[in-house]
Image (tube, rainbow, N blue to C red):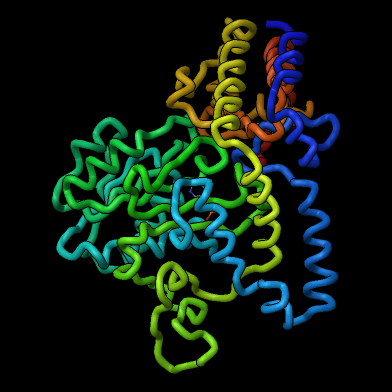
Length: 410
Ligand SMILES: *Cc1c(COP(=O)(O)O)cnc(C)c1O
């Protein structure tokens, strides 16, 4: 595989023009869109307009005149189209962690007599921590049942209230069979709660077709909503009447502006709102979601699989005997939009790569993650990133002492 061939893939890529919609700095090969998506150019203008016109000139009138008050539900309906949900089943609010807390708490209330939240050991830490904190708050009536991936189906029984899983593993990129696990859970009366943080914008999701009960997801990864962008949550319509939020704030009240002394939940998904939405961040996310709505999801998936396959092929062809190992599924069908490589000095190697403009990230203890955001990653970027990695490994550039000191965020 040579560079010219990769350039020819880019020329044939039906999504190639999308890259122009993003502000990728010169000299940077950005393979970390799975952690923080790149900046859509339109976000800059839109946020400038929101600040100067809607906030600056419109002031408080903009809650109505500029439709700020509708933003959580409006964005929710847009994201619903990306994840196979219906209008009114998704709302944008809070962070992924907070939404997980709300849905776990609400879900447990629907499952009296069932004591377990079933999950896997490799789940993203915040998901485990949030469940642990909620269980502590509920004073020991519940427990986490944590098993290995292969044991999940066998660990389901009538005592499991909720099966809580991340659809695409953040470390390896391996995809769970959502339909199969959801259907297995249903047979036991177990609710499913899927974390879509590495799915939306990366791999197609059809929540309704899979009969999923609950889901949450992140706005700042493949969706490109900006650092700390608001997150979203999904509740299947059949469950909405019964689901309550433990954060019964005024924005989720049936009549927020009636200022009644007692809480009455709003109809439907709106009761999952707690307090005032962060409008600047919401409207930045909306620009990015609107971009996604112009993209054919299947096309995006085809490209992300091809980018991953190309990456693995180049690893096999050019990094033999350099002590790296592919730590993601080789089969594109069960791999999300990332490939992780294992190397004993992964941290130092990633630091050296970042110094050379190839931005991926490190996950403890020995993983280098490379994400392939299909809207702005080019085939030639994959070629150049692997060439750079080869150079770092062959010259042992990672041995430089400054790469040994740990930074908290890379
Ligand atoms: C990124 C990610 C989160 C992020 O949670 P925050 O509340 O935004 O920090 C949660 N779950 C998973 C699986 C993630 O990958």
